[in-house]
Image (cartoon, rainbow, N blue to C red; front, side, top):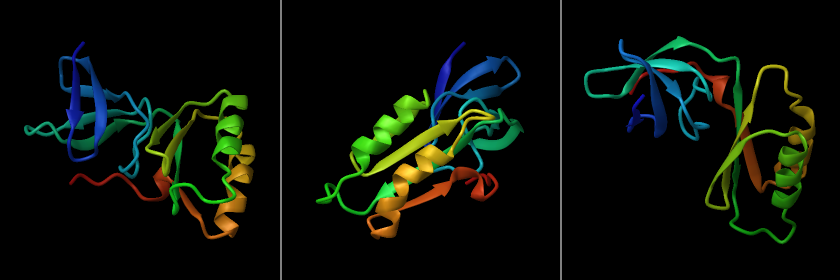
Length: 135
C-alpha cells in the first residue's frame, strides 16, 4: 500500500486497491463531505475527484477566533474528546477536527464548545454540512 497526499483537499490518502481507490487516512480540516475512512477516487493529477464509499464517520471542526482567549475552553474540549475516546487533530491552537465514528455521542463534545460559541470566540461545523465537490 502506498500513501499519497491530495493537494485539493489537504488530505492524506492510503491506496486500498490497484484500481485507484484510496482511503482517507486523516481527519480532514478543510474538505466538505469527507471523513476518516471514506474511500475516494482520484483524478489523473492525483486530486480527490469522487467519493466511492462513505465510512459512516462524521467530522466536527472548530475554529477559535483568538489564539489564547482569557477564558480558554480548549483544555475542556481536549478532556471531553479524550473521555469519549475519540480521535482529533489540531492545526495550531486555533483549529481542531474531531472524528465521530457512527454512533459516537457528539453532545458532550458540542457542550464543551458551546461556551466559546456563545462568547463569540469560536465557530463550529459538521464537515458533511455540504457535499463533497472536487476542486
